[in-house]
Length: 621
Image (cartoon, rainbow, N blue to C red; front, side, top):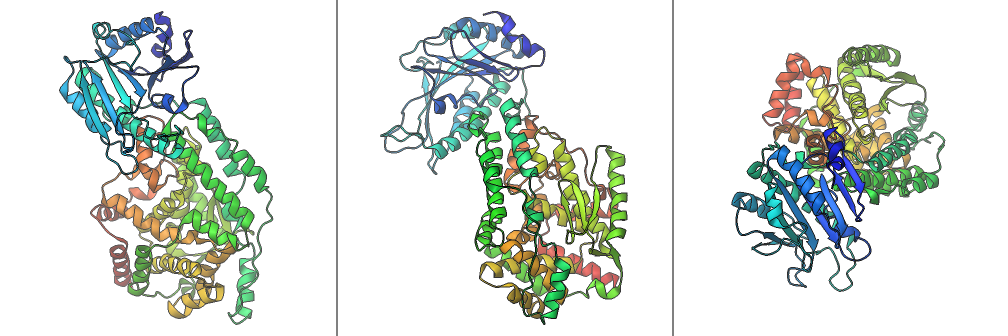
C-alpha cells in the first residue's frame, strides 16, 4: 500500500476513503491507534460497524480482505510519529451466560511485552460499561490469537511489533440484541455504544501514556475532532427550522395593556380575553422537514445525542404552537419544561415567607420608559461591540411585545415597558449580558445549535441571567419574591387553578400588588398554560450549585447550553469541536462583582443569597 494514502494527514486533512478490497478507512488525524472490524457475509451489520466507527481512527473491511500492506504502511508512519501504536480488532460474539444479559468483554493479549498498567486501565475502563444497571464482566485472555474465531490475524503480531505496534483483540458480547430473535434493541444499543466509545477512549489514553511519546491531557482529546458534513447539514436544517418560528412570541399576548384594563374593570373577577399573533407557519410541514433529517447517518454518539434531543424539543415546540389556546397546550408545556418538584416548591414557599415584601418601585416614580431603556441598551451594545465588532444585537421598541425579551439575538422592548432606574443595570445584564451574549458566542461556534440552544437550555440560561442581576448588585428582594411566586403559580396552575384563582393567590395570600399579581398570572396562563416560568428559580439553583462545586463559569457562556449537556460540552471542547466564548460579560470585571462571585464559589444557596440581598437593602435604606 502506497504511503500516498496517508499524505492528507501531513497536510492537516483527514483520510476517509473506500478501499479496493472493500470497506472503508477513516483517519480523523494521526493518533496512536487503529480500531478494526471485519464483517462476514455481504455487508457489515450496522450495530457492529458502529462499535468502531465513532473512534478517531478505524478500518472496516470484509473478512477475506488482505490489508497487511496498508497496516504496515500505517504502522511505520505511526511509529515514526508516536514511537508506538495500538492495533485493536473488535468483534461481537456471545460471551456470558445467555440469560444473564450483562455486558461482557474478552481482551485477547500476547503473553509477553504488554504493559500491565495499560491492561489494568483498559479493564477498569470496560468495567464502567454498564447496561440496564448490570455490572459488566471483563476477562483477560493471554497467548491466543487476537483475531475473531475462524479468521487469521490481520497482520502477524510479530510484524506489528516490528513496526512498534501492539495487536490486541476485543470480543464484545452484543447484549443489546434479543437473545432469541437477534433483533437490535435500539435504545440499549445507543447507550451501550456510547459507553463503549468512552471506555475505548480511556483505554487509548492509558496506552498513549504507557507506550508512546504522545501525551494527551485528557482522554477526550483522542476523540474525533472533525465534524462530518452530514452533521453540518443536520445542524443547518435544525437551525433553519428553529429560526422559522418563535414559540415565545407566538404565546405572548399582544394586548397585555388592554387585558389589564379589562380585568380591572371587571373588579378583578373575570379573566380578560387574550389576543395572539396569527400563526404564519404550518406545523405539518415543519414536522415533515424535521423528521426527514438523516440523524441515523451520524457516527458520533455525542453529536447524535445533541441533535436527536434538539429535534425532539422542536417537535414538542411545534406541537405547542399548534395546540395554542386548547386544553392540550398545558400538557405539552409540562412535557417541555417539567413540573415543579417538591424541593423547588419548598424553596419557593420559604422565599415568600422569609423575604420581606418591598414597596413597589412604581410608588417611588423612578421609572425608565421604553425609549429611555432602549437608549441605555444601545450604549450597552456599543460597549460589547467595541470589544468584538461582530456583536450585532439590535435594539427594537415594539408595540406587539409585552415587557423585555431577547429573540434571535436581538433585544425587543415592549412600547409600554417600564423599568425601575434602580434595576436598569440588572435588566441589561440579564438581557444583553446573558441572553444576547450567549447567542453571539454560540453563533461563533462551528455548530449553529450552540446559538439556537441545546435541548432544555432555558433553565440554565435564565439561572445565569438571574446570577447576572445579583453580580451587578441590583438583584432585590422583590425580584426573588417574583421568581418564587412564578413557581407557586405554575404549581397551582398544574393543580387546577384558573386565572382569577392565581391572581387571588398572589395578591391576597402572598401580598403582591394587583398589577404585579396580574402579570405573573398572565405569564403562567398564556397560550393555555405556559409553565416555563418555573425554570428561573430552578435555573438559579442549578447555577449556584455549579459554582459551589468549583465548575468552570466560562463553560456556561460558550453558547446556549443546558445543565444536562455540560459534561458533553466539555468533551467537545477537549475535541476542539467547540471553542472558548468570544465574549464574557462586562459586568464580571467590576470589583464588587468579583467579591460577590467569590462568595458564591465558597458555597451559597438561594436562601442565603436572599438573606444577603435583604440585608444589603436594609443597610442602604
